[in-house]
Image (cartoon, rainbow, N blue to C red; front, side, top):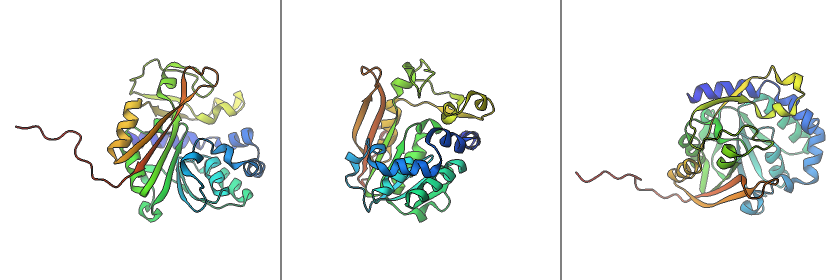
Length: 266
């Protein structure tokens, strides 16, 4: 099932992403100038958890068109991006070159990274905005995170809050499911579609996604031996009584965990 999702989502993310980023951000060199003018703004959710990123190794999984990776690189970090879309890689590479920074950008399914061990380990793994719904099993992605973190490495995950996905209508979440525990696959519009003119949207490929609850997410992170330090819920600007995003911070402690469900006494 995961292979089916990956194939469908790769096709969707290579059916107009490059043009969408130009439509929204401008040409790569123009966008690079914007990022270089204030790289800290795009990293505002995470810099308090990284401290000074200069010299740190950061892995940006599903890093899209490279905004966060480029900004970390502008602040002195050594950044590797893994993303499934060649169009995202092209835009990110051109923007990084224009910004005068180097990215190691790997165009691959994150669950099948060629020669993964050769990447080594990282001080931080960043995953952000519209990420977890591309996986049919969270243990596989958080196992990858755990493998690639060094002994004191930190996961930084910011995504759409499951409550918002279920109950709210926002710019990024226009179609609430109404079912918090919905675990079925859904076909939908690729995220960048809203950036394109209406006449260009009809021919775009669809993505396949699967929703997760807060409990699913927290349990899956903890099961990989990552110590959850905080689960920060971020208010919706238009409705501050409800969360729109969350940031989860978890550290690798290198401990061997006992089984969650020990064998019962016979």
